Length: 506
Image (tube, rainbow, N blue to C red; front, top):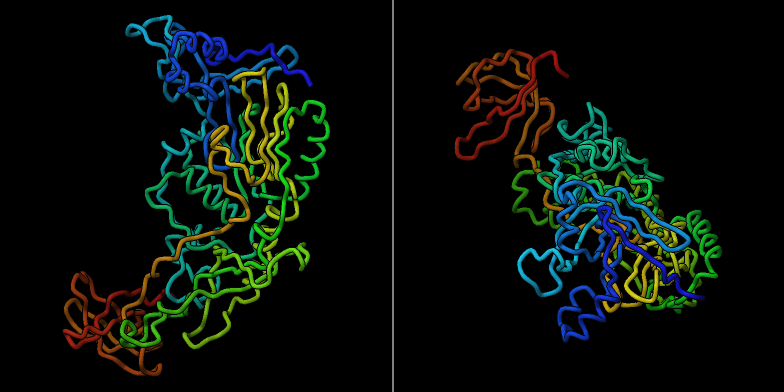
């Protein structure tokens, strides 16, 4: 297959310098050390799947750079004698002079780095939001198990609802409307806390937890959400590979085996929550402190794998976004066991989709411009380059055994085989050690006391009457019939009212 040798790169509407010609001139001049600055980089653009920005490198003269407004989006156009590819929106990152010369020499050649808008989204967006944070009383029904401030107008947030809400924090930089999730986990999303972080990182974390990733189509300048390893996408992509077989100039030809990359089963870990933890007397010193309990786990055999190709006893640990809810520390089965079983099955299938079923693990090079295959459910990255030997398109699908650092730098890409891997959860907010809830039998005046009929009590039966005292800072009396929470103050030896609602509230 002959190479496409008539090529051009234009960035910022300026024609880029041929890296091969420059390399030859510099080697003849003994500038071998400076050649290393751009050799293998310019002129090229790499487009990955996921949160990392697509990144490009071209060679331009200083006089050309001075003609470009470097503070607005600039187009990239790549062309051969038969085809062209146009990206309307890339952003200048920086430029480094390659050839020695005087300061601001208009003829000096610079290595210019630029990126797609994910570079801007990652660095210059922010969010301060939390979604479906579980209260200590994890046994509460429906949305009441979450803190009110983390709900969506009193209702639980959905997966798509969180995506849509975080999209607004991107300030229109990613488009007006968030793409739709192609699928959602069986469990309700919970315990997402994004305080003082990049909104782009936050929204990618939610997509990742759902087994999905953002894909950018730079030709249309739009984002979509894809399910990693999705089988229908593979069938479509495999057909597209067949259509460009005549342009193939190099195939890494990965030889796959199961035993070194696929376990017999996955062990799905769920953070453990015990209903009303911390309400027991002296919980902090109790031998059965709920914080010391291990996570709840469910083992699932990796589907679609023959028994004789994996080692017995091999297990991959994977954290889920769901939580296992137990009534007490003595409970052996979570109250949401059915949901957890469904989610564990989904995670095992996600692993199989990306690491087993597809069988599409490639690194191929094609002559000319290939624009029919872009990063998606089964394609990890695409690179277009004119660094030597004509114009070449490189395509990487799924994981690869090849260390790409020896060729071109491939950004780290999330794969579904690592879906929902979370760090250990921080301790949850906890009730004071002794808490009583009840109804005032009389008015509680500022600085005074009153009798409270107990409804729920840390270490006594309902129906007990307690004397509760005003908490410092109470500015008005509480009427008889008010619902009150009180905690036991060891130092004062009193029950202190610390939260209350009016008699009209439930």
